[in-house]
Length: 119
Length: 109
Image (cartoon, rainbow over all chains, first blue to last red; front, top):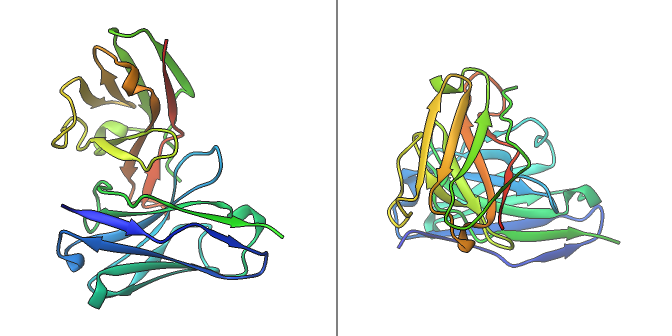
């Protein structure tokens, strides 16, 4: 079945970096885009951007430029989210989610990765 | 940027009908998708293209979209429907290509 499996929870200190992985299975990885969504504690869903799995070209939503980097390893059907210079306000659950290229919906979602930034 | 507004909460008795609205400027011209998120879990798609149901989603879930409001309707509500629900559209006119609604907490009384 189509599935996205993310890496485990992370506890980081302010200023550090973190890399979250999202491994896809059950479909052709390059046939769909991969999106990233943030959910801060007790808050709603916030779309961070997406990466074209054919070209590797990322698109970042407003507010997610500079410290956030999307990347791929198509040989293992895996997408990555790297966040640098972590701040306390980056504490959140980060989800990867598959979508078509362009207009569409997110299905399925990864199980989420909790990133906690604390000194 | 495009804004989608949902009521923070909706309460409904078991067996009754819950209606969750999603307001946006001329949202009827866009395709609306809906997600259910239970505590500690990832969101799950329950409606796509305004009113289509993915396989495995009960017929009790339905959707509509017209004018400035899209609506997710849950008929014959069950205790297991208690969750947060989010609407979502794709907006090509803003930097936020994908936009989520503010979310609605459905409480089953």
